[in-house]
Length: 401
Ligand code: AMP
Image (cartoon, rainbow, N blue to C red; front, side):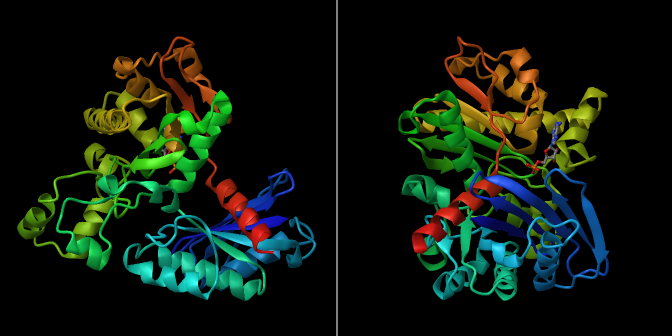
């Protein structure tokens, strides 16, 4: 079965086409600047040169048509006809409490997603645009939604409730949902596989640290706690997001600076984190360069980021009464040798013993970075959220036939 994976944002659309016979990627790409006058389609057919096209793409239906055109193009395509696409999988950020696992797209699941627009006003409407666009371009092809939140639906009440009046949960579903679930799910399973140990018996802390970031406590293969909350603002310090802060700061600053709700939202989501502290960039590569060049603000930004990540690891070891494996993944987790080193150097109380030579190796494969004596295995596992979406889509569509 060939499965097209779609990750639609408000002005962008990423795609990957999988051949599920061997889980190979036939092509992938990205449409950027949807709704603007010069939209860019970058198409990467496997083993061939990238292709870039600039045109006017005003909405998602046209974007998907362009993607289908290039996938079936005589010169740059990888399919002889659109009919070869037998299923479409969509990334959907928020599945609320309704979706504990991936689901077929039908009128009921679409209605539920619309009900969740309130909880993910930036992300879910974009996913819905992607779904509608795929439906209109590929009528009759089964589609599946895969949720960032679903993996965390196993969290117990004590982990997902906020200590605020319960009426707010009852009326508005104010609770913690988490995010990056497909990634935490994938890397925890990949870690167990790599170590050849049964997932059911393991306590794993997965650190998905990229531009956004979250840490999850995975016990017996299920998420028991995670650092993101009702929205992806809670938890770690991120590229441009504040992460945890005293909630009283919000009304205080709004009052002092006469900020509106949307202004304070923008401040915490887009103008905080590494960017705010370094004053230079939200990109960890630039922060690291700044630190190496002796820039005090970059150094402070790095230290805060690392310290907060390490505190979450400690709290999840406490939550699970121990930890067998710590996994680093995503852009920073997979690539920043120095971040992993600094974190691990302060985890000796857990029995972590870093092997600096192993930590310095770069490879696209799962690997251990601790010594044979280390009580806790620390791994680097490249994440693959698209593959999880393709696998879920394949399984659900096969089961529905
Ligand atoms: P992601 O959101 O998972 O794509 O991760 C993106 C982030 O990974 C970027 O903001 C970069 O700061 C970070 N990143 C990528 N490569 C490196 C690297 N070699 N060292 C440190 N950070 C990196």
